[in-house]
Amino acid sequence: MLIFIGLGLSIKHLTLEAIYWLNNVDKVIIDTYTGFTDGFDIDFIKNITCNKSVEIVLAERKDLESRAINDIIEEARFRNIAILVPGDPFIATTHDAIRVEALKSNVKVIVVNGLSIHTLAISRTGLQSYRFGKTVTLVYPDVSKPYSVVDVIYDNITRNLHTLVLLDYRSDENKYMSIPEAVNLLLDLDYKNLLDRIIGVGLARIGTIDEYIVADILPDLRDYQYPKPPHSLIIVAKPHPVELDCLKNICKLPDRLYRKYLSSKEYP
Image (cartoon, one colour):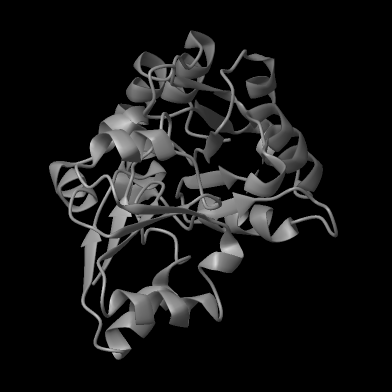
């Protein structure tokens, strides 16, 4: 059997269902490259499980893709294998190939969902879920500048939809993109000169004890002091009055901006 377990963004997000399966598997494979779960490590698994003989493996990308998939599926025919994934296991498409191949091979699959940045970013800010467009990931411009990211943002804004911007995370380098880095890169990519007049929401360590959320004009988000990453951003389309109230009272949008956009018909 193959069990995909969402870890959420903090160990306090683990569900009773997740804890049940962690106590009833023979092997635990920990995805170390798609995201971050606060307070989670091998010692946590050892302390939470009653099965002290459980095998624990730290997996890099190569261990959960391509030819490695067949090895995992064959092992899951005879043992209960858990794959632990930060956030929710299938909000991103990273592990769909394993699930599909397992089902094709008649290996039973169980999915244990977890809290995701996609849901937490919306509920923590008070922005309305049906007003979000396509999500994008902003990566470091090592080879070429990621203009496709701003194209998606422009398209969402045209349709009056917010954009959740996930920021680059490189586990092998222990490198996380910060909000100030992301703002600098987005402004550099902004060939329509639109983003310097739009509201952004900085999200730092969402779901953890030291989470920090702030809303301001996008360039000014560089001026705040954030806890260490992971960070993410929301680019806000024209806010509904209720959303504007949430931005002010939940996300600390400066009063001058609140009053400006409350009375103005133009945005940005």
